Structure formats: C-alpha cells, structure tokens
Length: 240
Figure 1 (cartoon, helix red, strand yellow):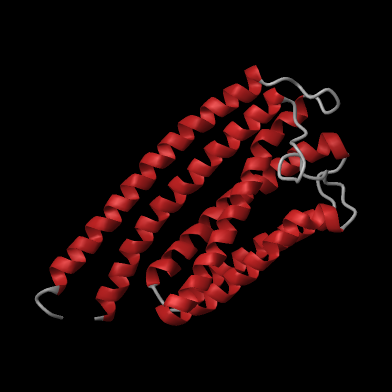
Figure 2 (tube, rainbow, N blue to C red):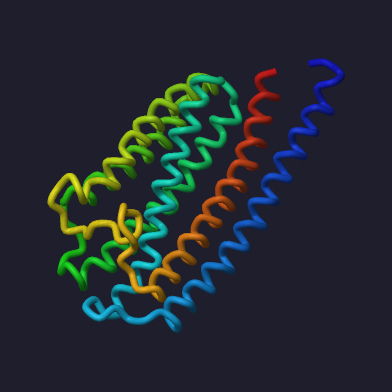
C-alpha cells in the first residue's frame, strides 16, 4: 500500500456515499409520486366498463412489469459491457439492477393474479407470457444465488455477466409472446405500432405511473449502486 492509497480510497468512499444519498433522494421523490399516482388512479381515472374496479390494478401491474424488464435488460447490458471493458463498476451496476428487478418482479407477480382472478377467473395459468416471465424471474434468482456462492470478484463478475446476458436475451420473447403464441394476455395497448388503445384519461394515468416507477427504479438502483461501490472498496482493501 502506498501513501497515496488512503486519500484515493477516502475519495472513493465519499463518491459512493454521495451516490447513495442521491439514490435516497430520488427514491423519496418516487415514493411521493407513487402516493400521488394512487390518488390519481382512485379518484380521477374512470372505471373501465367491462372489467370494473379490478382494472385499476393495471396502473400498478403494467409499470412494475415495465420496471422489471428494464432492470433485467440493463443488468444484461452492463454485464455484456463488463465482459468487454472489465470495469468493476459495471459489475456493481449489474448486480444493483438485478436486485432491484427482483423487487419489482415480486410486485409484478403479486398484482398480476389480483387483477387476473376477477377477469380471467384464475390466479395463474401456464400460458406463454406468464411462463416466460416466471422463467425470467427464476433466472435472476439464480443470478443472485450465483453471486453469493463465488468469492473471487473477477470470477463472480464474469459468470454473473453471462447469466445476465441470458436474461437480456429472454426479455424480447416475454414482450413478443402475445404475438408469437396464443395467450390469455391481451396484446399491448401502448407499446405497439399503431396508436395506443386507451382513452385519454386512462392513458394519462398510465403514463404518469410509468414515469413514477421509472423514477423509483432509478432511485433504487442509484442507492443500491452506492452501497455496492462501498462494498467493492472494502473488498479491494481486504485484498490488499
């Protein structure tokens, strides 16, 4: 260890703490936005004629699904960049995004059956989109377990990146499954070539909710990334 190392590490710690604080601020903004979104859904969004009140779960379920696939996609992209650049910060980000994706996936898998039961008459069905989505979630549970079993940072980052890339490759199939297979899931009503199918008031609420959950994703990932940078600094210190 050289005399220059302690100041460098203190600077890295300060950067990690600043990143963590920014993430907590963004998370607080996102949580306030979530509370406002719930009020918007309940009081200022019309009830869908055929599905009734159960359809309002859609404004939470769809954004959590979006956030889940966003998180897993960015994990895979960061993992791929790590294999190319070998920058440990990319591995820290990939791990952070995967963990946040698992949080959102738990919300997605909880709100989906709550919406599906009164509409489809069943909590779950082994149809293509649900099955592929569950496979995606299990893949990232395995990603998290893999990271816990490997102690060498370089080896852990390399194998995790490969699993992350597999998850990224699965994301398009999850989205396109309603076009490729017969499924009880409706086809996309917003992310499609033609104009959105929702009435303006419902589309407004969905867009607000998507924005809020995106802010929550950024806040969660930024905070978790700050924690990951601190952990990485400790690993480097112990390795020395």
